[in-house]
Length: 490
Image: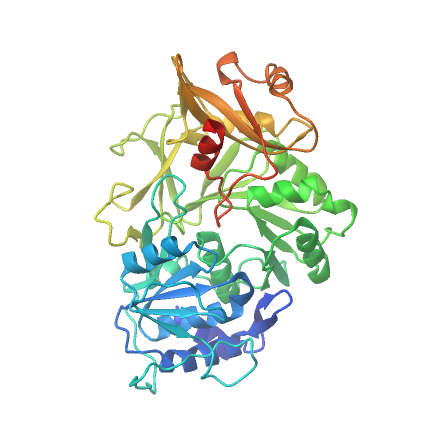
């Protein structure tokens, strides 16, 4: 990874790599120079030691320098959000065996070990530039270390929506794959790419890599609101925008297109979860010049992915494998099933797959393939359709209910701004269908069932309805369904 930054900084030093709204910016030359200085100041040589990086949403510039500094020093970067609850933060730091914790301006609540290093005192320059405080007795290296492309570069923790988060390890070779040709940089139609993904998520890391390798400057908004996000798009005349489905729904519900010029957007990408067809259709109307694309991957599978440009004739599809990735629908043992049959979704990167770190588990990984935890099917042309998360399928009596299908139908209701479907215990059926919605007006269960009755089968209709101000989501924007089950039980 450091070689990519150093080589690009040498040829295009003044290119702005990162802009944080209201905080400042970072050129490639500044990123390279400051990360080298910080690497020399870190305790080391690190030789594969894990370094936890705990930063807030306003500290993307500090984080970017620190992340690269750890890699240049021969360490393994472990990105963590400062919004994690103290027990979660302590668990992740202990689980990866971090030898050092580097943090931004506000000191997070940390376990007594390892030592925390504030980025505050050493590097000269503006306040927005991270600085490293030397630990007592630490020697300063004159040069950064030589790296093996197959050595670990980072550990990212999964969202933990269905269990305890797991660390996913990626090598330098994984992060630099597929290679980017300097004359064919991604998103060359844009001068600016806008997103609001948080630090510590796979989507956030992808945006950081885009800042390093793609054509546009990457602009991030520390705190997402529909109005601020739309204003940022307009301010920078952004050609590329990335969101998660929850952000997309909020943008549509706020009707930002009525108050902001969004005509500059030529590509609007959605990641982290399947984009409901009604939301995708709404985006094509709100962003009149944009191609709307849904990207499907996972922390474990990246950079393998499928990409689907929204097609009204295939509204529920997540597309086909892209960028040298491979896709199959298979049984639990990895044996492929025939087109049209439902099975488990497996993805495979072109080279250098990831792996779980320090868990002793490899059930998701098999011969370079990654078991996605989703059920799906392929049509005759190889387009992927998700049936559901394997853990989310509701088994109600003799029927299996797809929560994705019910959620998609709920998004068609004019009074539903957001929706999530989950199972709750039932004394006769075993499990019953429940729905949680964010409504724009009064909404009763009978109204919802009547609306859905022409779109869904009887066994798919919700028997429980929660109306909430917002759905509980994790940092990656995914709904925490165990929290909804708890609410329903109460």
